[in-house]
Image 1: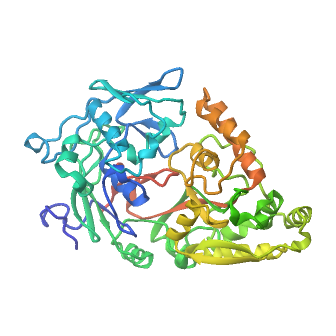
Image 2: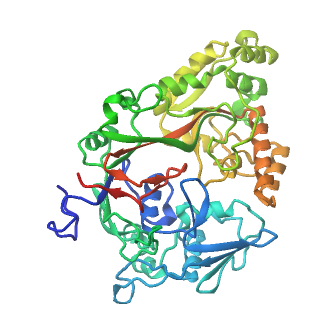
Image 3: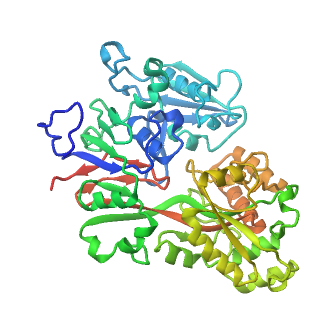
Length: 532
């Protein structure tokens, strides 16, 4: 039994009765929103803090701290009207330790802190080169916040939902300085209680949280959250089977055959033990191809030719990858780089690649390599976790005459090579930062560095459409441009989309009310845990 620190072992939390428990593989670096660069930190930040707006389970932008907002006709000025019943959690930095009301000046401070070079935030890019030089953030009164851009950027609302944009109190940051990372304080549903780094993180219910459910009952329902930091998926799943964890996010590839059928559903023997929810995850797994013809690495590389890249796209049976290497988890990526589930892409009909080895062979012949004759061996760089899929791809390409050698490397080194344009052909993934397809299309905008533009794709028509989309007057116009851009990129094939990912959320039978969205952000505010 684990006793919650600073709690009596004889109270109602004695046996973790109303505590939500999950494990975080890979540890946790910080609980400071300015450094919310990976899912582990984003989840922790999301429990403790609020943003102006948030993304609901249907991927809609909904009010949070801001109860309403409006945008000026020229798209440069965003005015947010704030709730007046939001309070920071109790903290020793406040007079008498009592959390004060959150006001517009706190939003100004939080965003200024984000862009301040001294903070060195991983999220500074959100506002850099987008906000006007003088006073980009203003608070005309306690309940009004105004953000000023220098040029229109229509996905701004979506970007403001990112955990980087959480509202923090100046006094607590000043008190702790760099140690604010492990002394967090926000306005969210759970407040920091205790963090034994590498072992346990404990959050307690924020008794002064501002949100209520539809019946007027204060949220959250849980008494707290407890996070463990076991390093392997095998241990995590064992603890889950023993009932010592309430939830796990995904499983290890080595365990998929034990748990899932080839159709991606729970094996019958496990269905009575726990629940599985499989849903869309905005993550595209892909092969990237460097297309910068000025790069000396590509001097004699056949991947420079569009027809060779198109042939690779047609030659891979994506359904087999999903069925045999993923146990049915994922959707074959036959329709562009932007994944299924991204708002605004429901009805698009972009240029895509069905499995057609005959067409691939024809394209190779058109490129001057009949049946692959004259093609040198091509090296595909792969992280170790994806080596099995890459070996399958190599066998598929061999069937049409392309010889591929797989070079397995550490993920960090591979990313470094991708950033330096030293990886002509690589396996990677692109996870959405926010619920707008611009986060995928920026990947191909020639004026952006790597990241995001790892392929060094450059095409003037694409750039014009991209710039027009940022200023489009309505969503319909913007979404049409997004579809055209995705089709254009597909036709020129600087990437080979393999599959659009799906999330696996396993919960115990006594857990209800867990919500999530396609960004894999989980919401615990309405979780109920029935006692056994």
